[in-house]
Length: 415
Image (cartoon, rainbow, N blue to C red):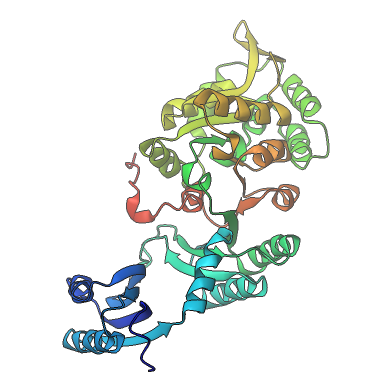
């Protein structure tokens, strides 16, 4: 190594590797302190007791850099660590500083289990788009070797720097990989809004719930097949939602209101729904159900899941029977979107700080206006149009898109 001039500082990147144990970082940094070094950058990771520690330090002009490097290598040897070092030229350092103004993104990979094929495909996509990987972090918990019957969850987060070479091609590739490799990929700008989401709005039918409630009502009324066909066409965006709702509700005329609690009691929550809502409440999020379904069932879920707000359609009931009409303004696609904006205004936040989750075509305006719009196990038209999607895991996968780790969560109590 060429000895730099004694009248200038020297920047050196040190890389330490070895078996991790308490006190290593303290011992190394204390040694740097003896030479009055400035710590410019640091990154440390531990994988199964294996330490990878990088320290970029500035050695002051009155210290001999070769002496510092020699002493640090000796110190590392005594700690049973390997040490590599490289001096950073001033021009290289200045270029590195200028790059900190580049855009930052988070790419989240979600799957039941992350395979090498998935990891390789995502890494290649990142490289092909000209993006640099700064950090890769496992967000999900450590998987057990044994299968105890609990649904598995796996999540890896890539912190990226730069701008994609072709944003449209990137989105197409994300959708393609998701379909081919049984995973979900979310590409978000890593800005202050991402780290400060405050309101989460969820669709109810086929999102919080596994069923479409109106189909359950129709079965009780003996018109199940007719209503189910209208529901599916409406969710695909093939017919106007308001028209479809009126047609379906009209077919329920004369149905006893006594069936409502029976249906509510047998409805099954979507995987991860309780876990999501429990932890959102812990973290201080405000939550809402924005549904084209019915208030009776929304309020039932509100009590069960401690949801803050419910907006849905109210069935008219006279003399204990459904009249086949709904009361008030229909909660359709545009109404959902305007309600989301209203919730943001009430909470005093920007709409970029909202999250919306839904599965049908009537959720698209809401998903597009939210800072984080997630198509959940959605119809093809919704998956193609939404910014983000979750199709492999349950609703609690939303927490991964917020950067929340499994170890930070509490689990719902078993019934």
